[in-house]
Length: 359
Image (tube, one colour):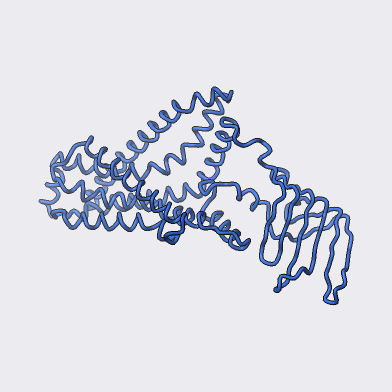
């Protein structure tokens, strides 16, 4: 049985790698032909264009891996069926469930790998690709995008106002910090002309500390240079402009908690957070759907049919995923339901198809 499992696993893995490579190359070539005019018109060097497509590749692999898994299942088992190998194995007492196990395990491993990819390489590569496209090609963001003016932030009982924040140099001009008690009464106000991140905290310069005492007296203290524990870290400013794809699961979860602490509605980010966890599982689900379809005709249906059915089913899933995401963004369904509902429905579909397969 180990020999049979290893044989099926080798066939599936080989076809999956070839299929994924082909899909990624086709996508990148088509995308290159569509965008090269934009790069040339913007005067972007070809080396930068090449770097853009290199940084785009991890995201393409992430999104096309489930499609490649489904197509590989249909092609691999279709070829086995066409050569009457499935009939021979069944005649030898090998169940279809036993044939499906190595493929499901390989698909689950693919799910784990693309989840790791989405939390390690993709946040950096997507940020690089988006920066090139938005700043150098479409000119939608200027280099001054690192400058934030009149920023208001709240964390618990602290309100922070930044006159100007330079994200690149981590410097602040004109900062005001308000500390409130449980009744939202002002108990302390700190003002400074400038502030600088010094590695483990903020150093405020040329400022005043105004303390409001219980007997309505005001205590004022001037300082030239002093370190303060501000509620925000430099990371927070940078994340606020990033898309969900440019953040790892941990960063996105932290950003959702930060938005909740500041009193903002993090609904869209909550949906994206659950989507980060649910989408990789589609590799396993696509395998569960592809297996009964491949087993349906014991003599196979050909490579072309496998590719067509695989792409068609993947398109249906993506349409359903987009609809579910929109419902989550609008608040019509909870974020966790919006993220996991397509997976649940397609898993049930795969199990239902298995019940109609002749063992």
